[in-house]
Amino acid sequence: MGKRIADCSCPRGGGWRPGARWARQENAPSQPQPKGIAQPATAPLITTHRVGNRIEVAAACPAAQALGLHAGMPLTQARILVPGLDVREAEPGADAAFLTRLALLAARRWTPRAAVSGADGLWLDLTGVTHLFGGERRMAERILVFCARLGFTARIAVADNYGAAHALARHGSDAILLCPPGKAAEAIASLPLAALRIDEEVIAPARRLGIERIGDIMAMPAAPLVRRFGQGLLTRLHQALGRGSEAFEPIVPADPPQAMLRLVEPIATAEAIEQVLADLMTALIRTLEEEGLAARTLTLACLRVDGSEQRLPIGTARATRDAAHLRRLFAMKIERIEPGFGIEAMRLVATRCEPLGPVPIASLLASEKPEPDLVPLIDRLAGRLGACHLYRFSAVESDVPERSVHRLSPVESPANWPKWPRPVRLLPRAEPVENVVALLPDGPPRRFTWRGRMHSIRRADGPERIHGEWWRRTAEAEAVRDYFQVEDEEGARFWLYRRGDGLDPRTGNLGWWLQGVFG
Image 1 (tube, rainbow, N blue to C red):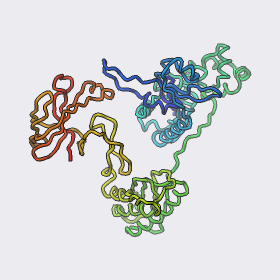
Image 2: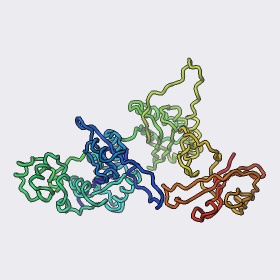
Image 3: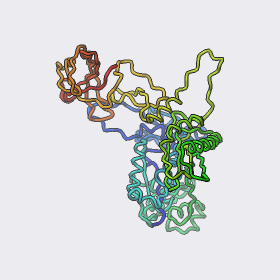
Image 4: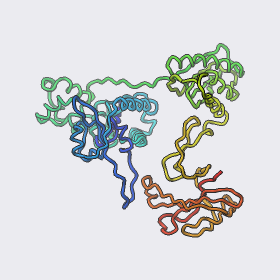
């Protein structure tokens, strides 16, 4: 099988375009909304940039394009056509950086040969890798699903060369277009001349002569084409037909900083491993200092005499170059290494790094005492208990309790909590309660059974009504929860809710659930 090239780009009707990071949420596929409920009006979004002495539209969201706005239109004309536009300045540098990061991810996840294709696409060399994903179509579907999770629409075309893949991805009609081998000429014949990546200075004279499609120039002699339109048109045509070569410079992911030592004789004791680790750490810290980086996660790989390899990972809550601290974290796990007949080589890799700038330190002249640094303690606890067991909670803007909190790392600052009372402990999932005695529609529960134990209520407060978030799920359009804070005869306090308002059966089935426990 010959070379197969995929071009992943946005469709002309939306998705990734220069400035699309601004429109990411606006362009994301929305959930179906229930009928009969007024939807909040969202102003069409456009991004702008300066071209000479005037400001032009750089990109427009699908809603703005449906109203007749397009890239290249003067901003003043766009404001006249659509009052109340959401206008933001384009950031081509940030867009290019994001596209480069996406290409690096593609090189690590999908194919080792990936490159940026213009300002809105990627080139992926699929030669020899599609069988790992179940074929070209399955691989393309997987990439589209990934783009959808990021909030972008995309189109993928697979052809024998870069020019044909580029043309079909940007001017084709299907989200996935697989051009059969050797059929590039037939596939691009009906596309406009702009698909050949040529300038408007060449397209305009050709259009005046009635040449609109690529197929119109395929049968023309080469010499007249060069005399009238220049060598560029013929070069791009040959590249799209696979007759001409084209440079391809793939993005190569940088190797992570690492240090390696091969031992003269195998070692097997914890003391020897710790000594070699100290030498590796010194070399790695020197490399990190030269590159201006600090480590977040490190992996110690031990190559044994029998050819097997053992890996020992550690992580830190904050990027650091503190060699003593990192050695202490490894020292807590050295006993997990099984040297077997001996270790003949060791490699220390900083698998995740972050830039490390200057950090202010506390001065003795300051009137206030410096706050203690808890990061070393957090790292040691995470090394013993596991990083997944150390976290703190932060508030999220949501009325539904189970969506109103999320986990943060121990060193992150939580957002402000709501002013209304909430339980200290929210259950991961609300648990049903049984044998509930309560008066409808607004009476608090007098008795309930939870986890096999009956609770008699002494005090209660409520109800607090919370409606479903209909903009997330259609099923929550009419959902209602009535929450009660209750205290039993032993002083335990619970947060219960009833599904439904007790009047309309469409709001819920009147089942009772326990959401959380107060202190």
